Amino acid sequence: MSLKLQIEEDIKTAMRSKDKDELRALRSIKSLILLAETEKGHDGAMLPETELKLLTKAANQRREALSIYQEQGRTDLAEKEAAELRVIERYLPKPLSEEEMRAELQKIIDQVGATGAKDMGKVMGAASKSMAGKADGKALADMVKSLLNQMG
Image 1 (cartoon, one colour):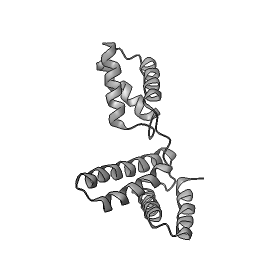
Image 2 (tube, one colour):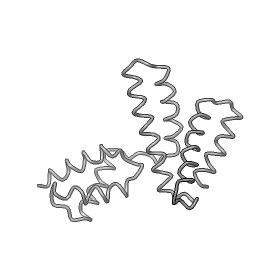
Image 3 (tube, one colour):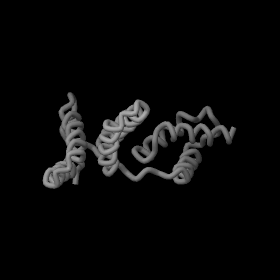
Image 4 (spheres, helix red, strand yellow):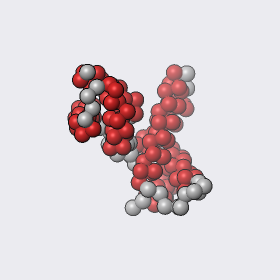
């Protein structure tokens, strides 16, 4: 089942259960999908990678807003963002643990033949593709840098 169809089914369920927070989050996801589908040059069908990018971006936006609201002491707004983030995260792949990420990166480093920090771009390119949605980009970059610096 495509993400769009899954979201539409979940919207119906949320409407029946009168869950306003979930409904708001699901509608925002559906809106992102519809906007992406109608972009210039788009043929209408969404690839899973595109869906994953949309969800990842939406989750990152919620995390950023959540931290800002928490810093400002706006618990009412922070709770809304946290609720929406929980809904979005249900559709994202399970994040990798630090150990899993390290093991996956070590495989990639071996595959691309990286020998030091100068190969960071090669490693990041491969890692970004293989771990899309499963690892935060900044955490990924930090770990790649750390592993490559240990080599050289």
